[in-house]
Image 1 (cartoon, rainbow over the protein chains, first blue to last red):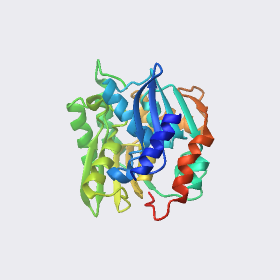
Image 2 (cartoon, chains in turn cyan, brown):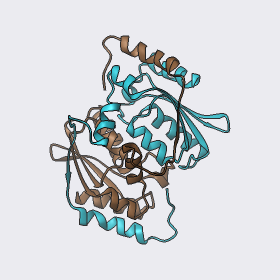
Image 3 (cartoon, helix red, strand yellow):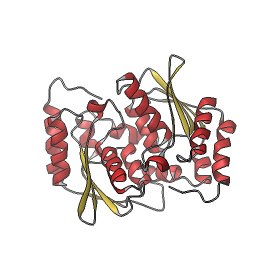
Image 4 (cartoon, chains in turn orange, yellow):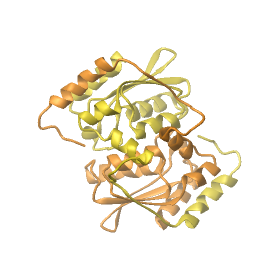
Length: 150
Length: 150
């Protein structure tokens, strides 16, 4: 976790984004380090955990990181928390909480509350449309044999 | 939405990943199209919406896409739903549901249930540790004047 904090400070010094760092570890060895790069890259998805997961999956040449653990200096936001699930990671260590993040101006807790259905405010207007048309590629996938699942 | 479906079929044909497509639109004009590329890139975060948001933010040279709308052939998973929030997008159109995705083998609904605290199974063991150390970069950010918020 000290290395995740160091990575957070590194990103702050470079003015790459918010004060967050993450490290992916396999068998006690560091596979990838990442810090928030939203400001540097203009990519709103470039959170520390996402950056670290992307690096690790490129390095290990696989999308399944089930043999890895992630250390994150802040509690992952829903985007990063879900990304950890998609990467099949089974162990997450985190330091600061979503409330700590809210206190310095980040929306992690708000987005969690929206997903849980307990937020009073709403940012995104959501409209469902065209389900039948959208089901067509789903049906093709469903019928595809020998597909790689992820 | 028809273009999002076309993009989903395009990704399927190329065997890039699951049957999902997304389109970012501003003032009625397409800014970016994306399809799932998890298999192609080995990046577990390369969902259609994330791919489209990344392209749009690079193209528009900004992380704030509040003047854009997103069309997604499938209901965004929590990763993509949160990414839409971080991108400040205010309007989301989607076709298939998380239940439709579950029926063809995707974990969207499972991850939503984990976040909502209603899932019976758990994939990720979560351990909080080192909060005081992790708060240090948070404090630096909190005290930084004239910072760019995102």
